[in-house]
Amino acid sequence: MKGLNQVNLIGNLGTDPEMRFTATGKPVTSFSMATSRKYKNDEGALVEDTTWHKIITWDRLAEICNKSLNKGEPVYVQGRIQNRSWEDDTGKKHYSFEIVARDVIFLGKPKQDKGPDAEDMGHLVEAAIEAGAEVIPEEIPF
Image (cartoon, rainbow, N blue to C red; front, top):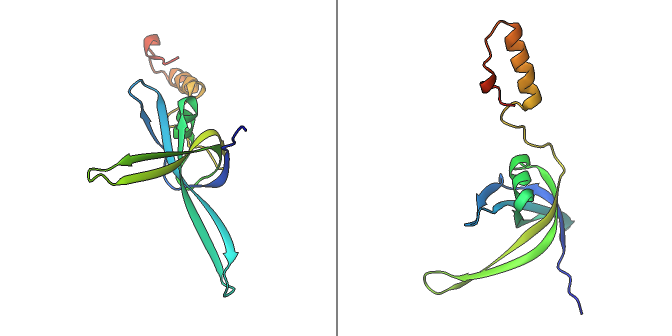
């Protein structure tokens, strides 16, 4: 029988994404994500239960998540559960569970780019020329 390992989560980023690269240059971005549920306990008090998830993205998705997500933003993640284990210096075995994302949908506003895009830069150059500035063609970034 074929198995199924699929996870669908909607929650909020607990950290800004962190991008790094493998030894072969492959981008990988990770971030934490919180999912919450509310329920009434036996005494009738409203309780909020939060679960934290470590999310891993690879390749182009890693680059997009690193550029477009911010801590606190809502996000939908679809992927699979992966577990890893390792031994520490004392020989004690540790286990980690993470979600390897196949799809991420941004439910909040994306990060603003840090600089002007090519269209904005073109308008800036035109304005500089109109104002009498000398523009050297090799310095135009497009």
